[in-house]
Image (cartoon, rainbow, N blue to C red; front, side):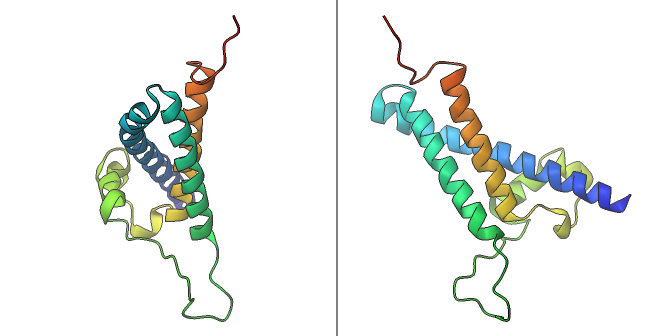
Length: 138
């Protein structure tokens, strides 16, 4: 039962981190995209590109360390859960209700992968639901 609870906490932590990071990305990219293009097309493209960057960083952070190497040349470690954005997300409910141990948090790589995927979903939603950037016939 303990491992099921840990898995649930990791899932909630990862989804909450992805939602907060994507909201921050949207808040920053909206004025930049509007100033650059004068429409929401710039926001859609920026969300796509930032999502691609987040997925790339998440993939690099999820790579296992090289075998037999104590000090890798290019080490991208995980941040502490109580620092920066991770600390802010950890103090927000529902993650704060669980009072997770540091080992119960999703890794930074997993968090970035989820945030990049959510950023892509928002970009796709702008296109599919709102019709942003879709050519019209007529």
